[in-house]
Length: 396
Length: 144
Image 1 (cartoon, one colour):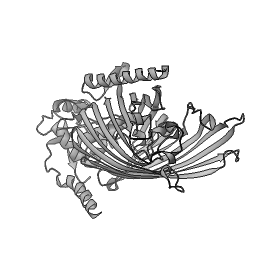
Image 2: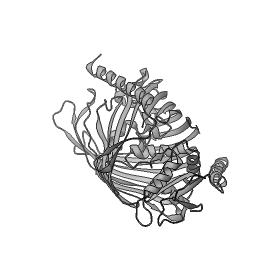
Image 3: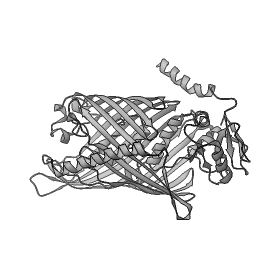
Image 4: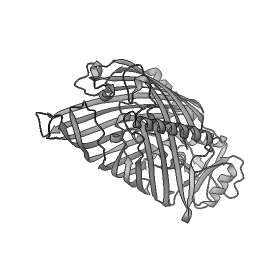
């Protein structure tokens, strides 16, 4: 066993024990509150998750074809309200999802929030990206029925790219009387990305990654019909990178501007939730060396329909159909599409501990990562496969 | 398609037809210059912390009963149009995305009355028949 594997095994054991201890010993309270000088209250919340991934063939998110426990999350957040309209918050987050995370703790988000009026507030710091219905809550296992959100629009392996940005945000909520209400966000900033270790088989080395800007917004209309939300999100970003092809000393500069949009609908009524989203992501590649990296433009198409039902206080059932075409101009072959049919059962053991069981039938290989599958072309991987996952989360 | 539409219509109409003529809870506010009636939508927005200010710009301080309280279940269905568990999911999303914190949850009706009396701007609800000790009851405009 290598040192890295041993430390991962130790971390998994710690996570498992922490989950068990938190679930068994946590008092039935919704939060921990600490009193500070000056009658200030510091509110703390946290969660610990441990999951298991198993696929019938192909490796998905981790080395899943042999079964993988590399599916863990831990988060702890603190919120302080030093003045009526002012709030500060920070979340420490650590995860392990296959090659991603490796239990390195980081500041997931932090902000200074000035809520001037309900129709206008300002946040600065590292704030979550409001994209679609669930991007800003995509890592909150306790807040949804499914283990994995529809991966066509909320891909877990792209969490670092899509979850949060460092900059500012303007937001608000405006009642329209009998016409419902508008919920809106506008943001701008950057995303700090680390260059991850690369496969030795990769034809080039990534020297740096920079995001000169990410900007966009989300507008949701809360209709007069209780629980019905309709809206859309738009995001522009650019990724700049230098790549060094294997066997050369010179590098190629690439600029990758992207435009992402999603149309969203959600209806929550009684114990039912229905949601559907449709999205297109257009990604261009602009290179200073056309012979090595010719300019290109790719548009992907994504969408899903989802339904969940709360059977009683301890059981929820849900399912969705999710569809991904990574290139709308080349939909043929297993690598040109990903159909995903998922069914989930969620058991709430008590108000601070849950267990989920989920199964997926997959047709296509577009959502798979070549690096997790021996750098084989996606079209050569098994086109029909299944995923089984179990996850338990303790939270307060 | 028609069947789906009918199911959705039935689900949408359900809560309205189940609207109680006399709810088993009373909405109360701090005794002061608050209106004697509030629109249901405004009360829902206040408890979901989408509306955080009274018309005079003072902060709204909502307070909840414990999740297993019967009055909480009826309040949640009537005013928020969703179950207590669904509201808990809503707050999990808000908490862990850094967008807000839920109202405090107090263990019994007397604690809610006491909180409302001691916090200007407070709004809460208690089981019908609970002594209000000076807390001001408020009518709900169901059309709002």
